[in-house]
Length: 499
Image (tube, rainbow, N blue to C red):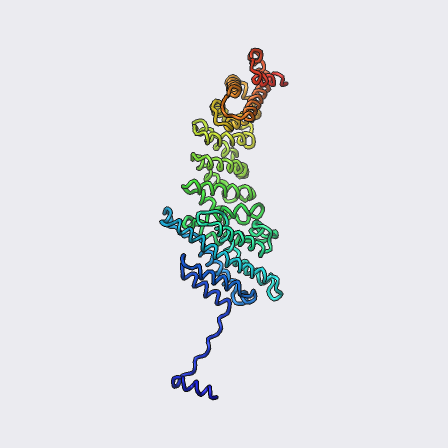
C-alpha cells in the first residue's frame, strides 16, 4: 500500500501509472531484425544480418514455428533471397557503372544471408524430430520457404560475376541442407518430387521465376536466366511434361535474344524440353511448329557453337514435327527436314570458315542416316558439290570436316545407291586424290587420323563398286598394277579383293 501511494504521489494528478510493455516474442524479434536489414538497403547490412543469423540460431524450433506462420516465414525467405540477389539492371542498358564493386558487395551479402538460411533450415530439420511438431508442421513451412531458398542457392552456387568462393561454398551448403530437410537424396529429387504425381519444388520455383522471366523483366535480373537454365536440366521425363506451359515460353524468349550467349542458352533449354516431353504434347497447340521456326531462324547465324546446338536440337525435333504433320494428313510430312537440309547444304557450299565447316560436316551424316534415308536423292546435286568441295580441303590436324564428309558419302551411297553409277567418275577421282593427299601429307596430322581417312575413303570405294556392278574394280586395275606406294596399294587391294 505504501509503494502504491508513493507511486501515485509521483504520478501526475489524474493519470494512471504506465503499464509494462509486453515481452517481444522470438518470432517478432526476428521480423523486427529483418526490417532493420532491409532498411539498410544493398549496403551496410552485414552487422544486422549477423544479428539476424544469431537470433535464428538461438530460437527454439517450437518458438520459431509457433511465433511465425508458414506465410510469414515464406515472406522472410523471399526478402532474404531478394536481398542477396545481384543488382537489377535497366532494360536494354549495358553494365552499370561500378558493376565490379556492386558484385563484390552482392557476394558478401549472399554469404551472410546463406548463414541465416543454414540456421533456418537447421531449425526446420530439428522440428521434424519433435513430437509436438513433426513433418505435418514442417511440410507447409518448407513448401513456402523452399522455392526462395532454392533460388538463392542456385543464384550463387555456380561461379558467376556476382559470386565469390565463400558465397559459392555457403550456397552449396544451403542447397545440401535444403534437400536433406525436404527428405530427398538429390537436387533432382527435390525438384521433381519423391512420388509420382507429387509436384516437388520445381513448381514453386517456376512460380517465383515467372515474374522474373517475362518479356519485359527477364533482362533486369542478371541471375534469372542462369537459375532457370541450371534448374531445367534437373527435371527430366516424365516429370517435365506437367510443367511444359511454364518452361517453354521463357526458353523461346531467351533463345530469341540478339546476344549469342542468350541464344545458345535458350536453344539448350529447348533441346532439353524436346528430349523430355512426349511428342504428343509437343504436337498440341502447334508447339512443335513454333519451336521449329524459332530454331530455323538461327540457321542464318555464323557462330559455330550456336549452329551446332541448333542442328542437334533440330535433329531431335524433326521426328516430332513429322509426326504432327502426319496426324494433320499433310502430303509431305518430311518437308521440314528437306527445308533444313536444303539450307544447310546451301550454307556449306559457300562456307569458308573452318570452324563452321567442321560443325556442318559433323552433323550432316545424321540427316542422311537417321532422318531422310532414300529421300536424300532429292538433294544429290547440291550434296555432290558439297562432298567434292570438302574432300579437297585440309581443315586441321584432326580432319573433322573430311571425316564427317566421308561418313556422309557412305550413308548417301548406301541409301541412294541407284543414283550413284552416273556420279562414279567424279567421286572416284575425288576419293583417289584424297588417298594420295593423305599418303603424301607431311603436316601435323596424327597417324591415327590419317588411318581413319584412308579407311573411310576405301569403304566409299567399296560401296561405289558394289552399287556400280564392279565398275570401280575395272577402272582401278591399271592404277593398282602401276602403283608403287605401299599405303595406297593397300587401299586399292582391299577394293579389288572385296566381293
